[in-house]
Image (cartoon, rainbow, N blue to C red; front, side, top):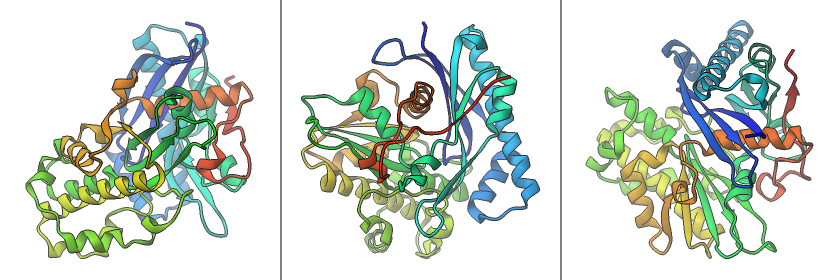
Length: 368
């Protein structure tokens, strides 16, 4: 062990922070320890309300910024304890922060992640890299997705055309051509877990559809599906990115879901995810023979089965087959992005985000 970084990631599910200790001594990163720290229920609710409503008092925003940082700090300390390693052995923490606003288009493009990095650096004794998205946006990019650079670093193969699919709250694909002459591509295809989870939370005692069994019990409503597929976002070309700020229950209400059986809506939302992913793969990666999925959605058995059916000519599996657990890809990506910034490297891919040029991502917050 000698090139150690910690990656912290809390995504659009707004339920927990994933923490991962990664050793970059070899080209293929070695994940040494992992841990998930759940957000307290009250914090989770306040964050969800803020993201949904997109309005708050400055005092409440400042308090949330601090509270998220406290959970991030706790996650780091418990991870170090679990790994039995001291903070001074860690080069830096890559802290994604909790996204509460992502608006890459329009007159004032911006993306805001909270979780005070100064507090995190001070209370862990480790340098922190944070605020990864806005330098890419300042250079004209979408600020997302950022994981494709990491995917290319660890998963690109000179003999095989691959796609890496992240099934988080939002689904995004990374297209990894075998040929270096072809650019790496990547973009958000649309909703994945976010609508499925929110709809399940409204109708079930659980806040997610375990293994997709509820969706499996329903029937896809073709008319509802086609109306949802008519949203302008799906017709836009890459580069593009989106988030829970757009795809949420308010968006779903535009299609009058109460007119349908709840389980049929869930089945249709699952079809929306699989069809938008399959369309993106066919449009941007028609030579692909292998698709490797990561993110929480890989545990939705029904969703994975639907993806296999939608892409019959492609081998569909998870990144476990490539040697990295699908649960820890994104947190590992931000550990790697922190390493890039600390070593004066760049972290974005212009063919993915649409930025004018490659830039170092994030600011460095030194420990005391």
